[in-house]
Each structure stands twice: as structure tokens, then as C-alpha cells.
Length: 85
Image (cartoon, rainbow, N blue to C red; front, side):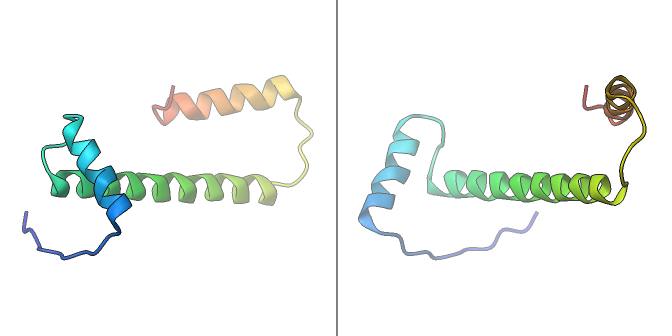
């Protein structure tokens, strides 16, 4: 994987925060911390996209004539199929 060098400027308070995260032992250096932030942001964006898709699907599906039990069964089946439970 190719790596690109980036230069950023942050205020002292943020620099202190980054140093504290490294001092905690969770990260070895600034780059590891920032890469983790980017990965988390990517995951959050993907989760938001999936949630918006599910909301749109629900809104577009119209009013259901199914019982709550039937709806929950379909949700559980779908989640099992997708490996989410």
C-alpha cells in the first residue's frame, strides 16, 4: 500500500490531546492516531449511509398490514441473513 505524506496544522490544545493519546499507549505515534481517526470516520459515514438507506426503504414501503410480530420476524430473518445477529 502506497503511503502519502501530509502536513497538518492544529492548535496547541489539539496537539496536547494527540500527545495524551499516544502517551496512553493506545497509539505509537501521531500517524497511527490520525489513521485511526480516518478509519473511524469512514466507518461512521458507511453506517450513516446504511441507516439512511434503511430509512428510505421503510418510508418507501408504505403502510404495513403486518402485525408487529410479523414485522419483527422479518427483521430478525433479514439480520440473520446479513450476518448482523
